[in-house]
Image (cartoon, rainbow, N blue to C red; front, side):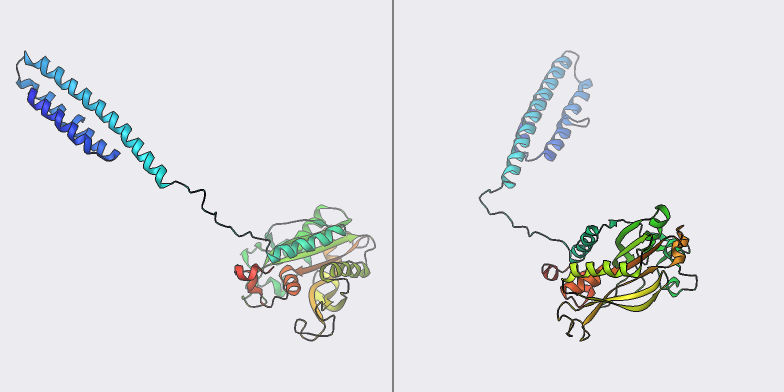
Length: 339
């Protein structure tokens, strides 16, 4: 029995020297020290030896167990140190190697255009307000004088979540919220994303950005609207820019107008950008319809106002001479890095 114990000890020492990682060490520990290990098997077979030899063999077996446990602990420490050394060598950083240059990004042309528009109107005393993109039908249509039979309310023309809730088709619902919750005077602009069921092409997208404005106060007239938009156009496109109004119809304004600016490339003489007309359409505007004021709790006999709305992408395309709306959404760095 003594010889067998010594053989186990020598075999364990020899095997321990060859171990290379922690997994092998755990398997070794199970093999020699586990419940079904070789030393445990020796101790369980001691019933077959004499009573005089039993304490001697037991003491020797425990001594060898203790020695093997000590060797296992020492081996575990050596393996851990070796693994750390290997990891440090593998992950060593050569500080003399030049670093990787990361290109600096910049503001998207739609965002920079929106910020420029906001800055112009803030300098004229307007506040910037925001509202939810998921809106009630009552705010998007009813409050803005668009009856049930209005074409824009067609279920196939607008993204409805249910019959009472939709993705807003314009930022005008923000104006309705402002008028209901605040007493005049009101002077705000409302930027944000809007949604319409349009096929994607060079001039249309189911999602785009709008900037709408609203002024409500006593004695507001069409001349105030024209003067405000002239200041905007000159600041946005240059001091020589002129504007013109063309009669139009919007359900929430009366009278209404499409607003054009003189072409900032040819000065109104006619070129490729303005398609030879000398003028470029940029927004719609008009005096707030009395029904809209009334729907929002404002007395149209005491107050009047004007409103306007423009597509931010359209302004950006005109300003940067971009001929395809899709270019703004493709995230092609070769295109975006130009601005």
